[in-house]
Each structure stands twice: as structure tokens, then as C-alpha cells.
Image (cartoon, rainbow, N blue to C red; front, top):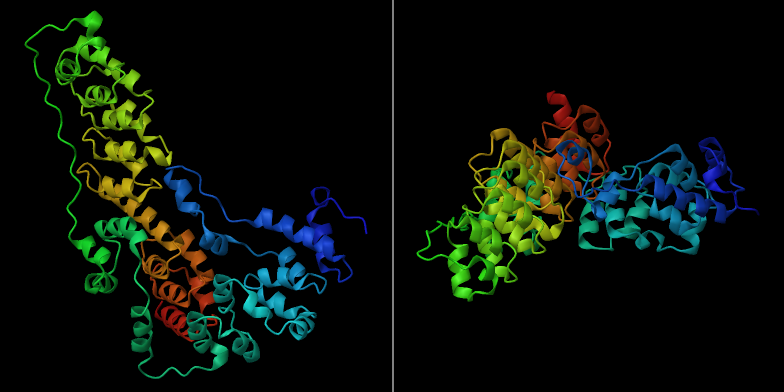
Length: 451
């Protein structure tokens, strides 16, 4: 069969191919790969535009799951019996109804009884949010992991019984979620500093015996480096040969208020001299333009700490979005001359440490701190950590556009937190009343009844 060039085929023709049970498997595979490229997760570029970050997700495995969108084309593809089973399984969590409607499913299971055990764990967890999974299939996958076994046990098709104390039982499940490990320390510090963690979850952290959790509450706030107090020299430098002078003399000049000497030393080969010049308040702003182009990130960070830097140049330094420039943006966030524009920019930085530092600047307004809190919650929501994910989906300050994506969360406790969130949109609550998890169903219905 001649393969069609999908770039030359319109959507109607693609849909016709996907629905046709006679379409060659290779053509279906090509169509699925094309769809992956079109339906991939949104990619967050290094930007600090608040509007952009509010609508885009950080990159990562969880973003791929939460951001993938369904379509009639995808549904038709997954329901086509000619599609290879492993490819259908890859999208089963996205369009479970279409997957179970595939007439080839019984044949696939006959040839491979362990088919469902081949699902990626996160996809399997997401798949279990579908309420109409036959019990025989639930039984076949419950041995994959303890987490999946618990999810199967609480699946509506398993007929779990919720007694009068069901909410207390639900809270017990919440408390059993493992606390974040040491890799999340910086983000946790930020969330605590921004009052973004509710009291019950904060108490779980406080009660943890783990050293990294105890350290969260014993951490001293960052303090700006002391500002150089320029000294008046008691000698006149030999300006034409200053760059060749002994190091001790150049250090004296770099610490001084000698404008001519500072301008010369801005081009010193010694990094330590240029660092002193960059942070010296007496260094002329005309020299700042040269230091801004310095090859060393350390010099540019020192310049960003200079209390005499112009707001315009500080804004330029704050717009260096590279990860290696995090110290520059941290210094800019602490600088007392940082304007509201600069702090707003840095409050949505991709680096948690930068956002955290903005919160320590007395010039940061309540609105700026709200934006920093929202950005931190977005990062927590897409972290590959069930506890942080649950925290973000339960927080009313998490932007609505990201809360809505939480209905596709692979963790039932994340969806349960979303169902309890007063900011959860009603249409999402309606969707959650049909969730595969018995607690999510009950919480969503309770929330809807209260509105």
C-alpha cells in the first residue's frame, strides 16, 4: 500500500483513515506519530512573562500526561482494530472509552494476558480514573505496585464501601503520602515563605523527623552582601601603569572612590579586582555598561548587587534567563533599587531560588507576592511528586487553567484535593463525579451540592 503524505492530507481525510478498519497498520502508526507531534505537551520556554507562565506548563513527564489533549481523530485511531496493541495501550488512559470499544481488545488479551501490566505506571494510574473498567482487568493489574493495588481497591468497579466515617478514612490516606525528598527543598522553602502550604500539610512537615524537613523551619533568611564603603585614597595612583601595579595597590583602588582608577580596573585581568569594581557604589554608571558585558557571570552578579546601578541596567541583567545566570537574578531580586517591574519579572522566574528571594525584598508588593505564589504552585503541580501535586491541586491560589488539567492527574489523591478545592470550576467537578475513585466521586458530589 502506498503511504499517504500526512502533510498533504486534511483533517477529514485523516479521520476517514483512522475510522476505516481496512487502513494499513503502518499508515495508522504514521498517523499516530503525526498526532503525537501535534498533541504534545506545551513547552515552557525560559520566559518570565506572567501571562505566558499562567497558561503554560513546565516541561516534564507529568506535563506530558496533564497536557495531552483528546480529539475525535485520536478516539478513532485507538478504536481501530488494525492499530498495534502497544500503541493503543499508550493512549488508553487518554481515551479509555475508545480503547475498550476496540473490537481487537479480546484478541490482544488472549495473545497477551499481561498486556495491561505493560503500561507505564503513571499512565496506568491515570487509566484507573476511568470508572467503567471491567473487574477482570482491574484484577490483572493490581499486582503491579502497592500504589496501583490501593487505587484498584478504591476503584468504583471494585465496589468499595464508604461508611459514615469515610471522610476520616480519606484523611488517613492523605497523611500516608510520602513527604517530598531533599530534591524539593528549595521549592518547599519557597512555598513555606509564601504561605502556600495549608496548616494540616505544614504540620506533617513539622512532625517529620527527616533532617531536610526540620531544616525548613530553622533556616535564616538570606541577607544581602554588605555594601562596599568607598575609601578616599591617601596616594595618587599611576594611572597609565595601574593595571601593572601590585595586587594590593589595585585592591585599594578598587575599594576607593577614585573614579578614574575604577574605570581602568574594570578591565583588569584579575577577576577579584573586577568583582570589587562591579559592586563598588562609587563606580561610575558609564563603567557599568562595560561590566555588564563582562565574560564572568560572577562580575555581572556583583554588578546586579550594586546599589548605585540604574534600574534600566538592572532590568537588563534580570532578563538574563539562562540557568547559569540564576545568581545574577538573585542579586537583582535583593537589590534595593529593584523597581516593581523588575520584581514582577523575577516573581515569575523559572528558578525557585529567584522567586524565593523576591519575597525577601521589602519593595515586593502583595500583588507581586501573589504572582510568585501562583508560579510556585504551578511548579508544585507539575512536579513528579504526589505530595507537592496534591498540595497544588488543593490550593485555591493555583491558577484555574492549571487546576482544570488536574482532572487528568494520575494520582487519585491529587484529584480528590482538586474536588475539595473551592476554586475548582463546576464543569471539572461534574467530570470528577464520574471519576473511577470512590472518594473523588463523593468529594466532587459533596462540593457540587454545596454550591
